[in-house]
Image 1 (cartoon, rainbow, N blue to C red):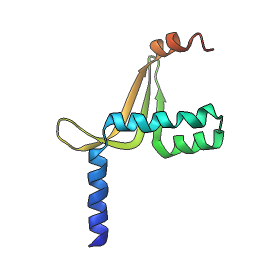
Image 2 (cartoon, rainbow, N blue to C red; image 1 turned 60 degrees about the vertical axis):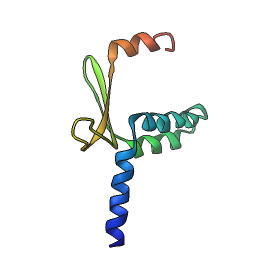
Image 3 (cartoon, rainbow, N blue to C red; image 1 turned 180 degrees about the vertical axis):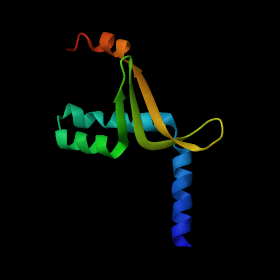
Image 4 (cartoon, rainbow, N blue to C red; image 1 turned 120 degrees about the vertical axis):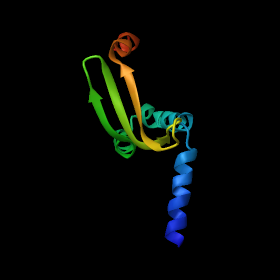
Length: 95
């Protein structure tokens, strides 16, 4: 019974987590990058990122974290897409 209750509480917590909350958690990880703590960065990436797929026009990142679907309230993996042309323009000066 305790196991069942813990499982339901975990599901409830996952359903309450919004995309904004996830972005805030990810932004906190910047401290590791600023400190150049490579092992912590690798651990962070392994904990949260399922896969990264690079296409000719975009980069798609699939996270291990699930977020509620606004249409049917099911939990789906968080997927973020970045336009490659936009990224090149934004970071051109940094390179």
